[in-house]
Image 1 (tube, rainbow, N blue to C red):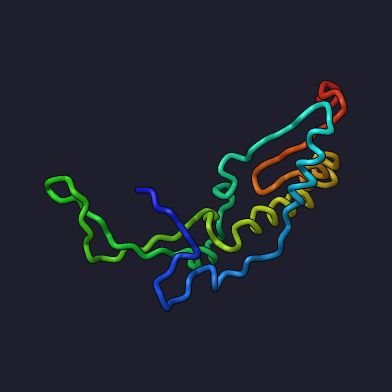
Image 2: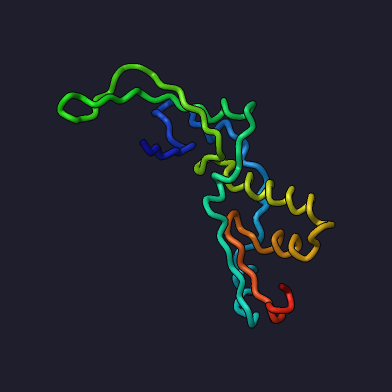
Length: 149
């Protein structure tokens, strides 16, 4: 069963998860600058990290903050869904989309990877750090791509 997660959802008069979660710094590159640089080049390079948020695994000690409580659902004999008054507990193991901190975490993770591999891949890390917006990479170059391979 698929669930939609919304950290801003709440009952009237009660706080919601995004009230308690620190959003983090804004680490994303300027999207307008990225898009303005893009068409100036002869060759376009784009990529999309498949399910970027789901690529990040939450540490065991951080999973309690993303705990969900749901009513258990059952199917009746005629095939209809019925709610049983039994609470089922779930915890995210991957970074959920919809938290106040969700844009910060992939960007901080990418910055950490760029720092770790800066010496090994100096050109790639420079471009990845400046041209990646969450899970989307957009860049242009005038250099013949065959020379880069």
